Image 1 (cartoon, rainbow over the protein chains, first blue to last red):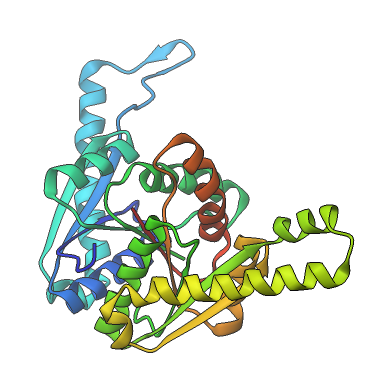
Image 2: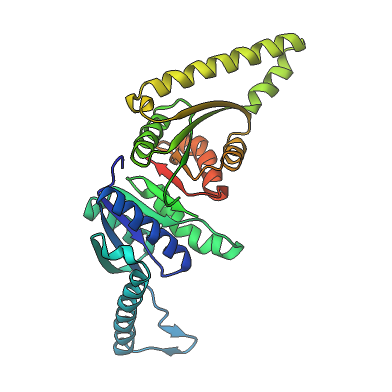
Length: 148
Length: 148
């Protein structure tokens, strides 16, 4: 990192990711860096339940809705922070396995700092949030700032 | 974190911790923050001494030497960085369980950012470094920057 120029902030639109985004924006302002805000839509939608399955068209429809929804959520999250207008922000929505997509984004964009919300506050949150953060921490080639 | 004012950098004198130290000094310079460099002498060293040496005086002498050595190593490591002369630096040696002592220092000094080197590069290093960094990440009450 030393001086960050491209900061990646993964978001799941939770309050925890709000904190990470705020932190990322503040650092970007200080260092005149770019912020890459990334949301990853999990790849696997459960298509079948017992003996009922969704058709290909239905699945595609749902996936498109998810992307539209994610775009709206992302803009809403950014709008919470006036600072988002003072720094350069690049938004991206990907589909896949969250930690993998995050690490791919790191490599593809020459990211030099990842700001991600921390390991859990409650028991279950520790498992769910923790697995993404943990894998990013392990696999990232650049420094990772874990916000609390 | 938002604006760091007191940065804690734990060090085991390894090259990885030098990377963390370099990063911490850079951030401190940028934000005009103080840097606390902490080395923890592992408590099991003391327990090993208790097992082999019967004389309490001898144990005390060896402990004093360990602290003296640690202080010297700490100062030597800090001196490698010219930036260390441009920011306010406090060095400290503690005795005990590394993660516990780091977390204790964080609370006692009102640390708002911990900079620590990451989970391992090699199999064994992953296990040894990982356990301290992992515990700090889990339990720290402030953001943690994991360097690579």
